[in-house]
Length: 223
Image (cartoon, rainbow, N blue to C red; front, side, top):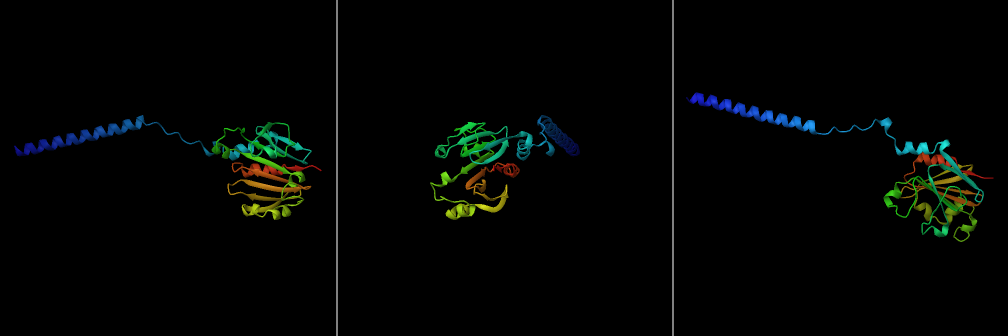
């Protein structure tokens, strides 16, 4: 009798274990069926990076020319970008005037997105933006830079400018000496003197180096 009881207990235990295993297996299978398939990331060649998009924008066939007879220079910019003019006295109020034809302003800004007063700081940081700030002798006359005619003399008058910059190096554009620098916020700059006019060019941190190079290579001074 005792042996029969032990045998029956073993059979019952096996049935319970088998049943529990079967339930767990079914549950796991059901979860696998119900779980949504994870989307595979696109192949690397299909991923269009910001750099790739920017290169497309800066191809010759996609560029317009902005020419300033008044300030003696011209540059090219993508036709799908936005252009704004700004006068020095309105700079603190951030008063920009949208335009597609006027290139004679002292300060010109071009960007890959429209400007408006509702822009958050995050959106501004994600914009590709180039500012061309022309400082002729009329503007310099009212500052400590009165009479300055070279980059060396300009930075000697205010040495703090370069002290707050990094990656300072020299180069040439259209046979004119150019000084490249970077701000602490990663804004890139190019400083050029031509015929007693200072051209201060700023590139936002989201503007790729390739775009900066194309812009500067197309910058020309009028004779």
